[in-house]
Length: 296
Image 1 (cartoon, rainbow, N blue to C red):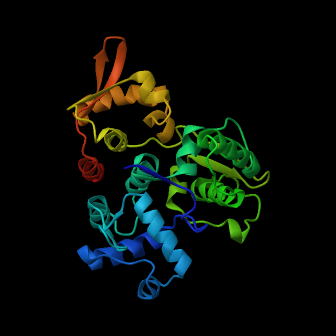
Image 2: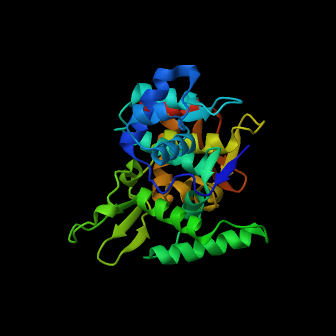
Image 3: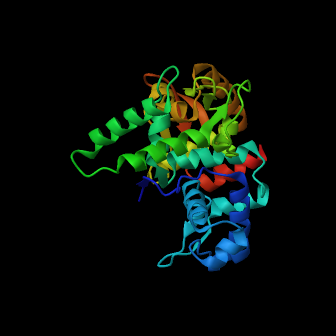
């Protein structure tokens, strides 16, 4: 069942060094798993209690680990095993795209991350701007149910911005508190302007590999009973939760996809629909798309 989260990150952003250490420990433990709330785990990772809890949160949200049934222990997922084998130090941009895709379309999605890329604000905005919009969205969606405290929502917004926003200008000294080595900044989906302390979404700054688009769609439709899934071009590019919206690309990239998909990846290709051009997905296994991502 799909789950969404508030909090859980303990105000710590996703960090490359934590990921490599955490996955290495999980890889050593194999099916026994690791309890990230255990003192021995803190010592093994060289981090504190809250940091360890945050790492467990990020490992699950990015699809790298799974919980062992009826236990608090985590173990590497099948996706995590592929990543550890192909990119143990998380240096490949392919790995970063995989993590972003799971944050957007996996089973464990931080609510602010999913909302942040589905409801992009045009132009520049501040931390306060995006907090106000996010809180309003949650209030509308909650339908009078209890919503998280403002502090929790503010922490979520701050974590989202620090996880994704790359520093666009270097003409202002950086506050040590703003330093983050989050790998997701490498995708350049969100920019930070230090002089005005404002942010701006970037579209098409970096183009996701075709296999990442396949992975995204496979996660969305993996429970579909149909052997193939067809999407109209408008659904593919502009619908809330679509690859075009969440992965950040537009029509020019779609035109390239038409040519490349037919020749390189037969299970993700363009097709003619009754009302125009569309996308055809004929492979629903996220694992196979992840494996293919490292082979291209």
